[in-house]
Amino acid sequence: MTLKPPKALNQMLDPTTPPLNLGTLPENPKISIITVSYNHGQYLKRNIESVLAQGYDNIEHIIVDGGSKDNTTQVLESYDHLIWTSEPDRGQSHALNKGFRKATGDIIAWLNSDDSYPEGVFTEIIPLLKQHPVLMGACQVVDENGTPGIRVPNNERCWFDFLKYWISHSSPSQPSLFFRREVLHLARRTDGNFIDENLHYAMDLDLWLRVAQHVPFTQRSEKTLSIYPIYDECKTGGDWEPIFAEMKEVCTKYERETFPTHSSFTFAIEIGTTTTFTTLSSTLEALSQQNMQDFEVLLVGGAKSKEFLQQALSSFPSLLLSHTELTHQTPYLSAAHAAASPFLTFFAPGVTLTPNFAEACIEDFEENHFGALCSLGHGASGEATPEVFFGAHRIFPCVTIRRTALLENQELFKFQNLEFFIKELGLVLLAKGWRIKNMSAEASLPSWNIEEAVNYYVSLKNYVNAHIALLLKQIQDEDPFHPVRVEGGHSFVLPENIFPSAAKLLNQAPENWEQLGQTQELSSLEKCRETTPQFSPTLALLVEKYSEQGLTDEAQTTMELFATSYERELNL
Image 1 (cartoon, rainbow, N blue to C red):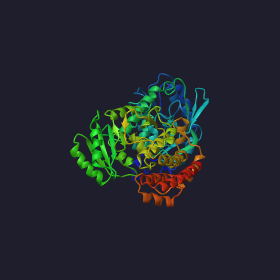
Image 2: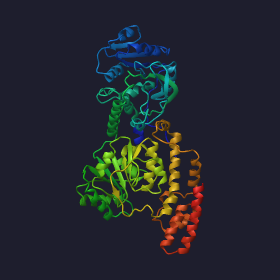
Image 3: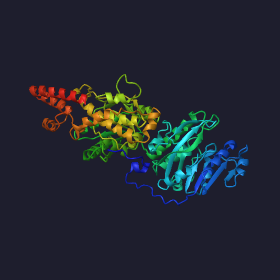
């Protein structure tokens, strides 16, 4: 599988959504530059001159000043080409709305009063915006003396990358963004404004989240398209706490609006071929004892789950029960698309959950950066690391997932087995900048034994890890935002030398190897051994089957073959 480039959110959630069809830009498109200012007269001249230095005639530079008390009006009066006003306003967001309403250009950009453009920017952006709705370029940060600091590349990203406000540069450096006029109007708010006037810091993030719902942020220029000074007196040069608080508020709002909810929590139960209504009834009886009642129970499966739903509705009238077909590659994705809450719990049949389970999980998700909660075992630290998932040969079969995190990565997940899925989920989410928390809520399963079928699970771990390693390689190689996460300490990089071994190991596995399990018949396992004799998990299962049936010699011989095969796999 090859990762697809970032897409607009509506295309990610519904692949049948057609891409935005933009009209053709004229040969020399009109460019509107919006600058808002208040008492920044000392910076305005540099700002205006940097626009003029582009040497492009078809521009309108709109400056909205908030009634400055310094020399701003004198600076503005010295330029005949400007479209400007100077009058009291309700702040930066209000001023931006005034400027955007005045804009008549085919291409629009927003350049703060203390920012400026280097030479050659318009020459760079016009050909690219004839092909793409949004363009990002690098942004050079400087100090108050103009000394260069970091250079922000503004990597390509998707809507979900904007949502992770805790990752540095999740919101691109705004002065280096240019967009077609149609994009601005497509993302217009229901109140008629372009910018949320209640916001003081994250108004650009709010706008980009609306834009990214409709168009992808996939086109960038390697060229530096703006110069962005940061100094003690500037709006973003001091205390970042209120900035992050507002970013969290914005991202939380869009997460809730994009994935509407009718309940606070979802218990998703897969109804498999071996599931009995007696087992389901026991689970539903336990769920009816939850302290918090604002939850739904979602049965996932085919005709059998529909039948069980009708019985359950009669037996448990107090529960909010519903059903969904297996509409996607795995039952977990099917549930995520059907759920009506922000959080979903998946657990194996027979798992017992404490009465405060849903409450405790919701509390654990209070911080937006947690994408999942896993039961990592007694003594585990507060958060999971890649080593936790790679090192474990079994994972307790219970996980609670933020629905947003699951839907973001829906194209990546393969495993049907819950334990394998939790491992796959955990490593993909960590690679994508989410964090995984050790579940504080308690769950138990008396029949679950980490030492059960230990040879099978230990040998299978190598194949599960190999599959996930190759999946993570795709993220490392093909996700343009991955380097940004790594640089900020929000992701990780696997060493290149493990990938050839992982590929070689998987090449000797049978087709659909992940679906082999302890329920396989002896004849089926023997047939699998004939076609893929080097696959040690099959040999481990055969040892168990032979032992169960009292075939001691066959078990001993197969155990020797298993040991040899397993050692060979470790040496790959």
